Amino acid sequence: MVMSSLTLNLDTVHLTDEQFYQLCQNNSELKFERTTKGQLIIVSPVGGESGNREADLIIDLGIWNRQTGLGYVFSSSTIFKLPNGADRSPDVAWIQLECWQALTPEQRRKFPPIAPDFVIELRSVTDDLAMLHSKMTEYMNAGVQLGWLINPQQQQVEIYRQLQDVEVRNLPTELSGENVLPRFILNLSCY
Figure 1 (tube, rainbow, N blue to C red):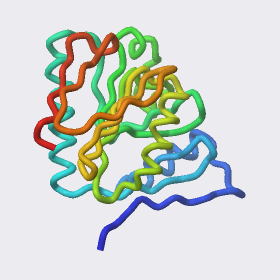
Figure 2: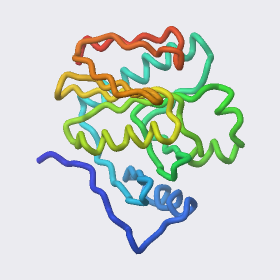
Figure 3: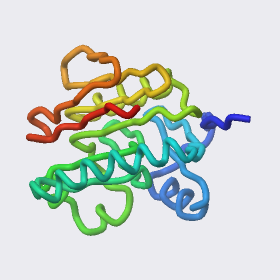
């Protein structure tokens, strides 16, 4: 049986940011997200293949980031309080050094109130593609500059950029971090 994410419509319950934070802290065995409409999403864990691929993406971005020192890399365990009201945890995220350092220590400790500059979503077999498209649109509306939706099931990657149409490429391909992640190249040959 394949587990998928569960969306709870809490039309009569509106959680404050602090209540949402406490819900996540009090239920650390579960992974939550929240849409701009306040829908609470319980995200299912991924299997070994997806977890390994996600780790490889974090390693590749992390090595580039250590070499350049341009920002900070985050895993899927990090929830970002986006300016559009959503609380999201991309599979991989990156924030420019200056933007991260502008946050207070308290903001960095909790769910940082910032949109990452760059995100990656890696579709696992449990992920609904329409939900991922919606999530990527939320990211872009919140100010994310560049986003990649890697879809191994359809052997495609979707590239999201501010104020541009989504570009779809077939796998294998090579992706550039463009001006957001200067000189970062990701080779997607093994997906």
